[in-house]
Amino acid sequence: METTQSWTVAGGTTDGVTDAILRSLAAAGWRDLTRQDGSVQARFGSRLAFRLFGAYLAPGRDRFPMRLTVSVGELATGTVVAARLSSDEGFYLARIPAMTRLFERNSADLFAALETGTRAA
Image (cartoon, rainbow, N blue to C red):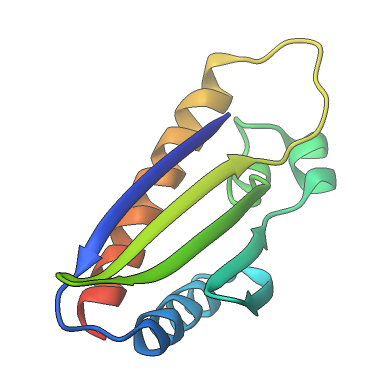
């Protein structure tokens, strides 16, 4: 599963917006935060915990594995942010609807938090 979202931050600088993204991700428990050439990459969750507990139990739901790439660039109208979020649960023979709902909920929450965090930058 994969989803993307982009938005423009009026008056923000590339470095300021990137710093705000890193702060938001760290506060939300994302790990392996990497900043490189106008982009940020991060991982969240645990394949093992998700495989053991699944999408129906809290320990699995709370550790749904995802990968995020955020690109930050400057335009005349402000700083543009483009985020791509993908699930990272590994191979499964079948995908249950709960996994899709979980990913959709997590992506909406993450994009809202990132957009709010960058608007304050």
